[in-house]
Image (cartoon, rainbow, N blue to C red; front, side, top):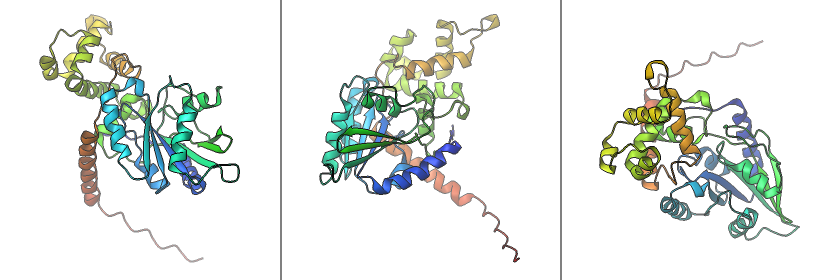
Length: 312
């Protein structure tokens, strides 16, 4: 399934980041710990260039701890990059963020050369919640919808450390189909960009193989892991709908309602601690997606040349 979502305000955010980054010492990219690869925006890497980067794997309390360690190792192996996990239970995130940023920019600090940090990330990754925690008040608007924050903000992390917040931004084209599904499942794209049933079925296909025990514990299918892995996702969703009373006249399952239940259970962590991708898995998806996109670009017919402007 191809999912695309790039509202008009994201074009403005892209320009704002490109302008702001000129005076920035460190870039913090917030990622969703449940899908660290798919929630890393390649557009940000393009905009921020070779600035030292701190990858923050947010919502790590909802992610698979073993896979979180794999992702931290993956990012820490990259030059000029540090990585830490974070979740809403951290009582002093500012201290952790400042410490990591100072390591990345040791020549900055003090009132003469304050440390300037830009925080970026895709929509609904938790930036606004973090900003509110840092400021100790409801300064940033939050919500369970993608694209809530629209304006840039500045936060003092310390006397000599300033954090600049920007609205969440996706990339203009999502070339990895699997990432589109994962982003939709996590709530990173607007509701009008995807079909609930398709996303829920794809999500069940992933979970029945990687997390059969958690799926069985949540929905009580009565299947052992091997049988669950072989079950059809549509049959599983039908079962979930019947269990949860998502029925219409005649006792038929309302598949849209059942799909909404599955997606909500994942987003709210009711299925348990889940990470939907590993570094090797995501890199395979990325290579395949980029190759397919390159082939599509080759096959596109040349656009007609623009007519020369008339002389006046």
